[in-house]
Image (cartoon, rainbow, N blue to C red; front, side, top):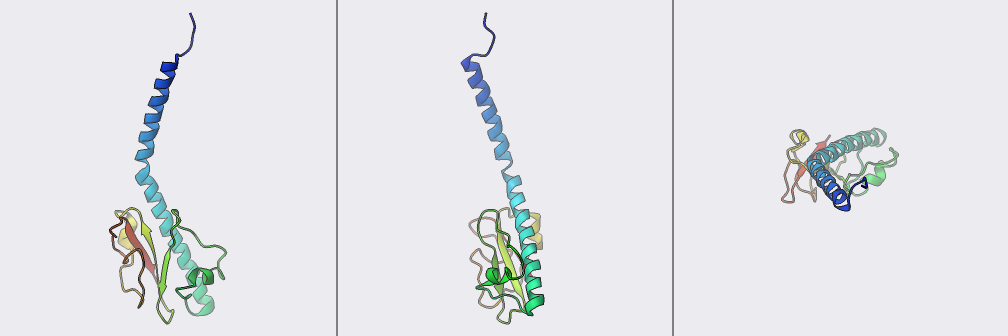
Length: 146
């Protein structure tokens, strides 16, 4: 008599493990979205700190067109969105205030209630939508302002 598992038994065990792993990964989806959204809020806070440092040195905020390049003159590196999209920035013509924005994945996020929803600088238009809105593509536009 031989001891050990047959090929069929091994295949059944592998299939069961695969099904369990798949169920766990599907269940983690909302948790991963929440983690990426938390990182986005943290990134915007870091960018806000950099903008304030830039303002303290230059008495105005960076221009809308070159804000990332201008900001690297006072900070070492800029945070990047977890999914690779860019953060959005608009300033007024006098460069005395600004709005930062990003598209969150989870519209029911607790951050949604703290999003800036006020007036945007003249001529500004985030391609992701208005601050505090839920675009048709899904998610939520989260904004910070001075």
